Length: 105
Image 1 (cartoon, rainbow, N blue to C red):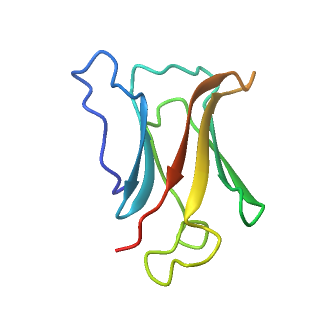
Image 2 (cartoon, helix red, strand yellow; image 1 turned 90 degrees about the vertical axis):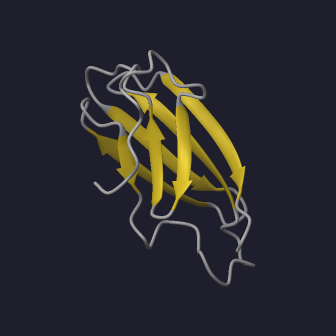
């Protein structure tokens, strides 16, 4: 993955999950543990779209496929507001969540 990585030297990053825009990545602290892996839920409330990604327990980042990511140009559409949830597998326990309003360049 060409996503930025969390600093493993930090015991717990605050916030534990961040969103990076170029490339569009969801990054979380290696201190978050999920023995069965992680589920990342990306939702666009205004359009009703939602995407679910399951990643292995060793993962600390997810590069969102370009077709699922918010636009970097012509972003007057319905994807400029999104929510991200990070859950543990297999129990789907919540680990972190955020809501973002994406400001176009």
